[in-house]
Amino acid sequence: MRVLACALLTLLAMVGCTASPEVRVLALERVSTGTNADEFAMRLELRNPNTIPLVLDRWSYSVSTPTGSWSTEWIATRTLPARSITIERLPVVIPHATATNQPTDSTTASAMDALPLSWRASGSLTYLLPGQLAETLFDLGVSRPDVGFSGSGTSAAPGAEAPAVDRQ
Image (cartoon, rainbow, N blue to C red; front, side, top):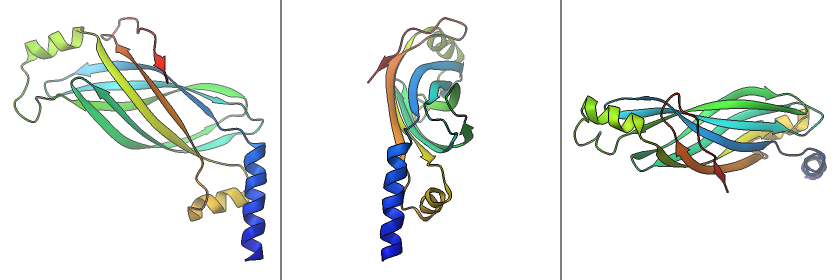
C-alpha cells in the first residue's frame, strides 16, 4: 500500500512538471468525393511546450457535416520533439447520408465536390508522461493523460484556399 501511495505521489509531482501538448484544428481538407462517401484529411497543429519529447499514443475523434459523420480511433505512432510545432493529418471518411439508401450519381458527386461544406470536429489525444514510472502506470491503465481539441469551419473544394477555423 505504501509503495502504491509513493508511486501516485511521484506521478502527481511529475504531472505538475510536464505541460500537456497543445492541439489546434487547422482545417478539414477535402481529398476526394466518391459516389458513397467523401474523403478528408483533418489538419492539426501540435505543440510541445516541454523541454523533453512526448510520446503520443492515440487519437480519438469525430467529425460531422451536413452529409454525415465519422468517429474513430487512430494510433498516433509519433514522438513529439521537445519545444516543437508540427502538423498532423488524420483521415476522415464521411459516408453520404444517401449512401445507405441509394447511390449518388457522378453528376451529384461532382456538384457536391465543388461546394463548401460546413463541419465540426472534436476529440482527444492520449499521450505518455516521461519516465519509467509514468510508462508503467500508463501500461497498467492507471494514468492515461489526454488533451482535448475541437473546431469548426467550412471545407473548400480541393485546390481552393481553406477558410478560417472557429476553435472552441
